[in-house]
Image 1 (tube, helix red, strand yellow):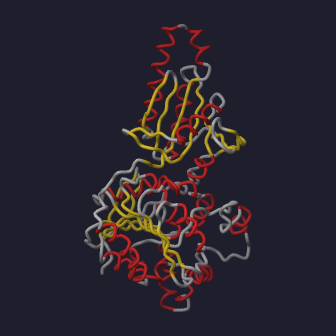
Image 2 (cartoon, rainbow, N blue to C red; image 1 turned 180 degrees about the vertical axis):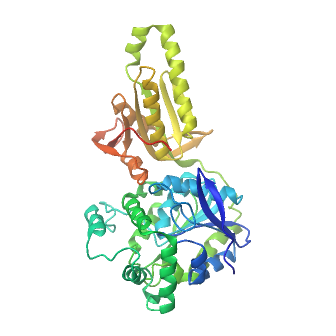
Image 3 (tube, one colour; image 1 turned 120 degrees about the vertical axis):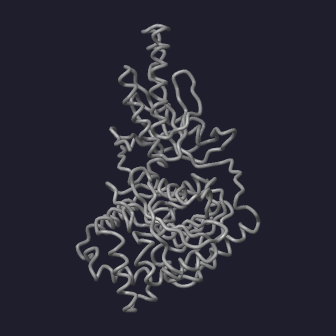
Amino acid sequence: MEAPRVQYALSGDVSIAYGVVGDGPFDLVFIGGWVLSAFETAWDGPARELFSDLAGFCRLILFDKRGTGLSDRDAGVPDLETRMDDIRAVMDAVGSKRAAIMGVSEGGPMTLLFAATYPERTAAAVLYATGASHTRAEDYPWAATPEEWDQMFAAPEIPAIGSDEWLDIRLKHLSPSIADDPEVQAWWRKWVLMSASPSAVRGLARMNRGADVRHVLASISVPTVVLHPVEDQDWHFEEGQYIADRIPGAELVELPGLDHGWWVRGSALAAEARRFLYAIWDRGEWEVVEHNRVLATVLFTDIVGSTELLAEVGDRAWRDLLQQHHAVVRRQLARYAGREIDTAGDGFFASFDGPARAIRCACAISESVGELGVRVRAGLHTGECEVVDGKVGGIAVHIGARIASLAAPGQVLVSSTVRDLVVGSGIQFQRSGAAQLKGLPDEWQLYSVEQPVIAR
C-alpha cells in the first residue's frame, strides 16, 4: 500500500499535515508517539506494515502533531488541549463525524483526554504501550520524579540530541529486537531527524514532564482496549494495567516481549485493533451517541461586595452596571468558546471543553470588568459532569462552586486537576494551599493563576 497524499487542515492559524489511506467502513485516527512523523520516511521502513494493515480494514486518518513532521511549527510547545483541537480540525477536514482514536505511547494521554471530552466524536479508544502520567505520584510509582526529570535534562553524559550516539540509544531502548540491523538504523536516523529538531524534542519532553490525566480515566465512557507489552521498558506494563483498571469496562491485552516501538509489532498490533473495533461495528454501536456524562471544565464567577456596591450606587445605577457586567462576561465566553449554563444575580456559571480556554476566559473577565469599577472572584474545576437537557451538573459542578467561594477579589482559583491538564499552555500558578470544601470529603489542593495570562 502506498503512502497517503499529504494535505493540510487549519487548526486556528496553524496548518496540520494529514493524510487518508484505506476505504474501510469506519474511521480510525492514529495518534503517534514521541515526535515521529506519519509520512514520507515512515513509509520507507517497518512502520509501513502497521499503517498498511490498519488501512486494510478501515479508513485510516494520519496526521503530524503540530511542531513535528510536516505540520507547522508553533510558538512554544502545544498543550494537550490545543492538540485535541488539531484532532478535531483534521476530522472535520476529512468529514469524519465519529472515529476510533488509536493513541500509541506519548499519544496515549491525548487519546484519553479526547475520549473523555468528546465522547460524541469518539467511537472507541485503542491504546498501545502508554501511561496516565509522566510524573511519579503516591498511587503512580512507575514514572520519574521531578528530580529525575531535571537530571535527564542536565546530565552532561547524555549524548547531544540528534547525534548518531543518541539515535542509537533511542532505537535500542524502544525496539531492541531490530536495533542491530544496519538498514533499520539508517531508516531510523533519517525518520527521527526528518520528524523534529533538537529543540522540538526538548520542548516535548518538558511538556510531557507535567502531563497527568489520571483523574480523567473514570470519565471515559467509550469502549476502550489497552494493548501493552508485558516487558515494555519505556512505559511499564503496570501503567497500562492502571489505565485499564480505572476506565469502566476497559479491556487489557498482554502482548509478549519488550519492544515498545509500535513499528515493530505491525500485523499483530493491527490484528488486535481490528478484532476490538470490528466487534463494536458488528454490534451496530458505532453511530450510537447516548452519552450522559462528559469531561468538562466549569467556571463560576461573581462580583465581590455586590451588596455594598448596590447600597452605594442605588438601584438604577446597579441595574445599568449589572447589564454592562453581563455583556462583558458574555463577550468573553463567546471569545473563548464557553457555554453559559446559568446566571443568578451577579454570578455566572459556564462550562468549557478545555481547561486552558476556561482559565484564559476567567482572566479576561477579571481584567475586563475591572474597567467597570468592579472586581470578581472566579473558581474552576475539571471533572466528570452529568449532561441533562444540554446542561451539565453533578459533583464536579459543586466542587467548582466551592472553589469560587474561596477565591479572593480579582483571583482566579483552580483545582489541582485543572493545573495538571494545562501543562504546556504557558499558564503559571502559585500554590494556594489545601482547603476543605464544604460538604466534600478530603482536602483539596488549590492553585491561584498568575495573571496576566496570554490569550490565544
